[in-house]
Length: 93
Image 1 (cartoon, helix red, strand yellow):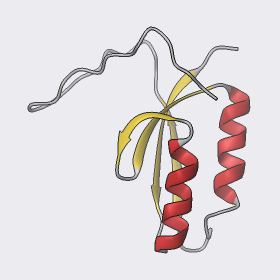
Image 2 (tube, rainbow, N blue to C red):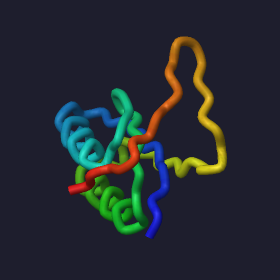
Image 3 (cartoon, rainbow, N blue to C red):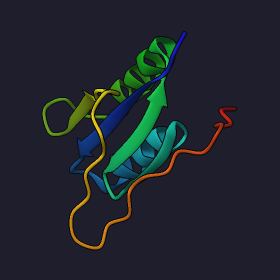
Image 4 (tube, rainbow, N blue to C red):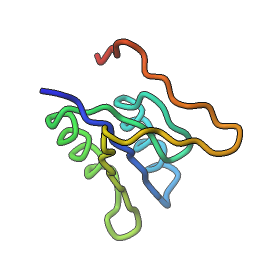
């Protein structure tokens, strides 16, 4: 099954929940910063990530956003940003 590129962003109020969410998302991320991460996910991995985050967040205080990016779109950068370069392979394990 092919992987799709997602941006996973979150706003979590409690520092303890924030640290747990960061650890969970970084296990799937190939890049990102602060609370927005790039994740190449298969459907099963997306479901697992959502499940793991649901166990950590407080739905009354926190929010998580998954944005699937269109692979046909060309990346755009602004300022001194460098265009992203994907390696020829990813290790997931």
